[in-house]
Length: 353
Image (cartoon, rainbow, N blue to C red):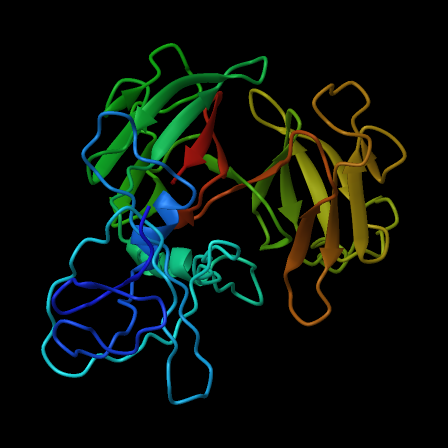
């Protein structure tokens, strides 16, 4: 094996300590080799029968001395390098078989300081589009009436897809032919946009809506608690006086109360009449001013009536009863989602959603 310095211009093999080429007088300088070409062949030998020669390993010194001392090339015969135009600059990187080149560190991902998610992942996702409540409210809604069966479950559902729907025993879009407490044409349900209204069409027994908050009552208004149909009597008493012959009639002492509750009996006529105690009257199954112990649909403390201090109205309040308190409507009233209605013997639930 022959040792020497190969000329980078003509490829002539010179002595180890030669500074210039003996053939072409070119300055001897080591040819820079890319790390990717050196590292794979470190310590490797050409396979038997292969025509490929091992590339020489060159060590370049970056000392501050202006003169660069060429080092010997170890190999069978160095391949002649491609001639380069212009001055040859020594490389500034030291490549050695003892210290393999290391790859540049990968860029560290950037994270959101608040959520901890990578910023690149956040930027790649499309921005979420926020919807407004108004868009949901503008969707078309079809109100429904759901019949409540005797055991409390849901029965038939009627979709109010038209503008007007009449409920009755023998007339209208919704009929209950076997309910003889319904008038032939009993009530009208009107749909206006997403709103629902109910109106009594002059029926005998009226339309009753379950109250969800205290409501004012006037003299003569009717309401339901359990199976009891009651009427409010808030008219003042007549002053006692003699007849035309100046004779006074026997009477009971008059109670000092502002209003009374009258029980309306089946077949007509009035039943019990209970006066308020001062400004309040309670109703229920037991321990109230007006009790109905035989009515299984009335709660222990069902409802209460109070005299309003700032008007002539009497305020009706449901006191947490199980089956609710219902008031007979006058004229057209708006219904809301979750309302309950009594017409005849039919209990209906309103659904607007």
